[in-house]
Amino acid sequence: MPAHEGHHRSYDAVIVGGGHNGLVAAAYLARAGRSVLVLERLGNTGGAAVSTRPFAGVDARLSRYSYLVSLLPKKIVRDLGLDFRVRTRNVSSYTPVERDGRPTGLLVGGGERRTREAFARLTGGEREYQAWQRFYDMTGQVAQRIFPTLTEPLPTRDELRLRVDDEEAWRVLFEEPIGAAVEDRFADDLVRGVVLTDALIGTFADAHDPSLKQNRCFLYHVIGGGTGAWDVPVGGMGALTDALATAARDAGAVLATGHEVVRIDTDGSAAEITYRTADGEGAVAARHVLVNASPQQLAVLTGDQPPTPAEGAQLKVNMLLRRLPRLRDSEVDPREAFSGTFHVAEGYQQLATAHAQAAAGRLPTAPPSEIYCHSLTDPTILGPDLVDQGYQTLTLFGLHTPARLFDRDNDAVREELLKSTLAQLDAHLTEPLTDCLATDADGRPCIEAKTPLDLERDLRLPGGNIFHRELSWPYAQEGTGRWGVETRHTNVLLCGAGAVRGGGVSGVPGHNAAMAVLEELGD
Image (tube, rainbow, N blue to C red; front, side, top):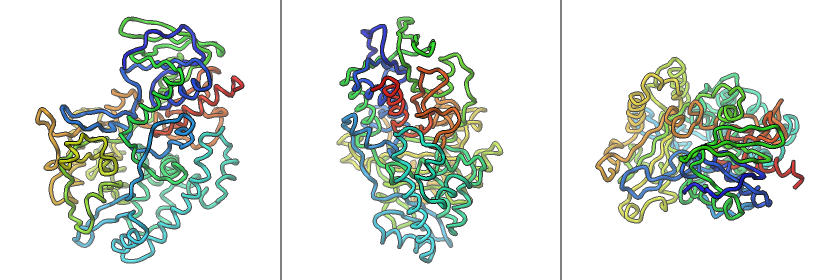
């Protein structure tokens, strides 16, 4: 997408950054009749929610960074008339394990009967399945009550508590470390681990961390859509941001790529935004500025003191396979196992050990990870020839690998971690995964890995944190403002993932920043 050189000198709103939240804000404001300019430093919009062809000469368009959708409200899709769809996964998860020298595992999904039988096969009885049902019935009720509030003005803590209307659920999710609930409700180590993983995605924490950052992570992973379901974006994640860009343009917004904002000067009622292009510097004026970047970058642009970055803690691996590998657990079809979330080395004790080792400055000896195959649910991301030949994608997300571990030598540590992570997966396969990898046009294996330091470099995520900062509670606290997007500068709003109720592919901060502007203008 080329830079647009025909923009005006003044706009109702200038949006800094063309990630999905910035595009949501642009589309809402333009549809409300406001003049809008989006300034994006890269040559394309989309931010971390993009699809790319990472392997030379191979027609596979992968969701390179963010990859599943749960927190995007249907309201935004409807309001903006987006040509965007998701597909549900028939299997929620599969977790392999060896018990008494025998390969087995836990398959969640495929209907209640199959799930019940899978629990019984693993645990030898009904107790864990019944506990699972009770626990997720509780989180499901919470999801139905909290999710609609994400696109409303921030409730107070007491208001949200009344909305939840379940004191036990409030205590479990908002007041006590999630580890207490997991240990109280479940007895099986593997089941405990599967439950806990939602509290650790991109969050480096122990189950009993007193800060409760693991609880906040868990909450956002179980409330999406009012159900907690994580769906597959049809056409890949880039299909969403392409649809958003189209909606914004069609409404009259100007999208200028190759424009890097370097400074924001504001007196609270009017602002000047200075940007840099390949041809030099320029500036535009705006009544409002919406910053779709991290809180750290916002502070740099406005000349304020940047907050301390929150450390990222994940390994992201994209792969293309000639075929799915076979499993040691012969009772499970690989096409089912990999279509949901495939948990590796994520038993409860394994997660605790991995966290303790990483906290002590060492790579986990058994790195935990979770994997899924986009192309099983949505083969449209692959060219017809690849589909005909049975090719499949795999996306791996590793846990408990904080950025600090890569400081000494990012490239060397990345390779060491990737090797040991794949070894944990291989322990549950009848063949090494590397035997199944496709090769690109140059004969290289189709696999790429990204550490927190890589994400910091490529996407300007401070500390490589995928949420821009630690996730916040979805209620008002001191200084959060009415919508959770306000800053100390009256006409400068934070519409990125670092806003209150930000994080994940949701569009919520973009929606809320647009609503704050329109509310202030009396629309």
